[in-house]
Image (cartoon, rainbow, N blue to C red; front, side, top):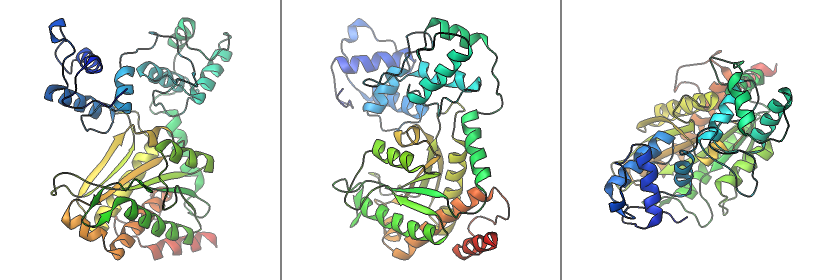
Length: 381
């Protein structure tokens, strides 16, 4: 479908208005409204929905928002669910299925509302254990079996508990850890352009600085794109998955029509209903605090999102928006190579703190690159 925004009209807008009305974000739509228009009220309702669902809050109905709006109309049992390669199924019913399988101890992967291969495998295992026909499809009989069993796990999401356990088992040393560094944009996609700086160039430079520091500690650092290439989010996630990455770090700068907008913000996977990547959330917090403390950038905190880069990567992923190029002060700082060195060091320290799990850690902003190297050497002896 086409992207819809304020001022648009037609049957697509009527569909959006109806979906928002069903969720009580708009008044009920009457026949007298006709197709209706995408007015201020609709834009505000779309923003409210996007914020609730962890989407980019821009008031525009693009592919991700439209898919989520349609998916919100489904509940578990309202349709037959299966892994359709040509037309993947998404919706709240798929999310509910993933959550239920996870509670019962089956590894359905990250609950993201998309019926993929891992969800199908978990469903087939469940059906096999229940002595059912193993067809990988969730129909009435499968739902009945799912609902009558007591969950095996409470007090945490097993898929994310597994993430935590992997970090614990990996140990405090950085050597051997495989990290994908993802500089945003690239190629013809320049990202935010302001004050003589281009986001694609800044993110690439930051990625190279971070790569050098990580390799010095013995980590295996991989950059997701070349200087003149701009992969899609799906391609970036696939790169990380095929590399078997332990962590995925996406580097960006922000922009805003208001020059007063400024600061650093970090993002991780989360749905807003208690489902969150605990390791991603922890790492985002470490990065946020380290970068804010070391640079003096305004702390815009951490936030959960359901962006494709989070739902498609199998490892914990974090995206960092480092300053606003449209803010004169942030722009001036980012133009300084020494400042970018400080940012790279802060991100590296945050990764180290993640693997330390509180053991021998130091207060925010005080751990140095030399400390990291000394710790790595001590652990090697």
